Length: 314
Image (cartoon, rainbow, N blue to C red; front, side, top):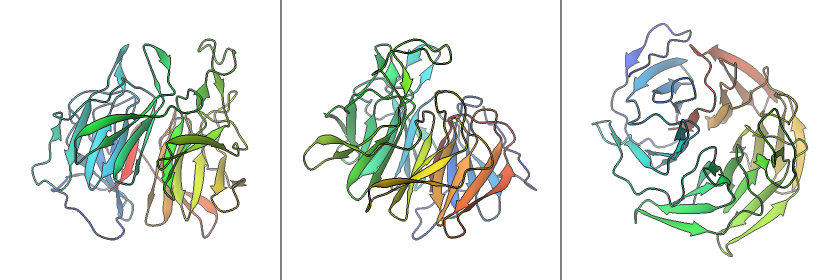
């Protein structure tokens, strides 16, 4: 089922075949979201126009995705109570755009997990499945088409974020199992955490870094100018619009201006030196952050709210 994305644009065109690009791109890809789990669309941040892309092969709730050399890998997720470890790929270098499901599955079924690229490998961390919340992690070598387990995180995390910077992985926030509490009717053994930890592939160890100022789950995170931005989410009591950033040199968190809207389950990527954030629960707006001006600005609206979409620069 193709879903036309029709938010405040003058026209929608069928997307031409995409080629690998050099330098900065003005485009990003948005995949799924709870409300339209198979739809895929491309967004141009300069023209503020959308174009349709091929639907994914299966509907996935809370998957994760990475862009490996213009090959979009979409992993895991769930449908109902069925959790997935399957992977499908859309090669933007191929003129015949089509999702390919003939890829090795992850070692573990995962939903609400996080992924990132580091040194040519795809890393997946945490999430949950039929066995509960996870601390397990694994990496995928796209050239060898092989998944391998790596050391577990220090705590179980779901609805967290994972980014890579300076040769390390950083896992931020989420919900963990370290304190027994009831949160929003979602059961026991779950709390919002402000903890963060980093993984060094050279020694295979996870180590804690200073915690965020605010506990967050359902957040999104990006790296820009050697700083890690933790954006929005839920603090255990309310949806939040607040944003903070971690300086990799001083190893400190500082608050930055808040977004115009509270966003739980939004998704972000960096395009042309700006942080673009899309959707979230009960949220249709798209806004961007300019680090030079140190302010957020609303760009446009989407045709519907999209909660937990996958958003990637291409």
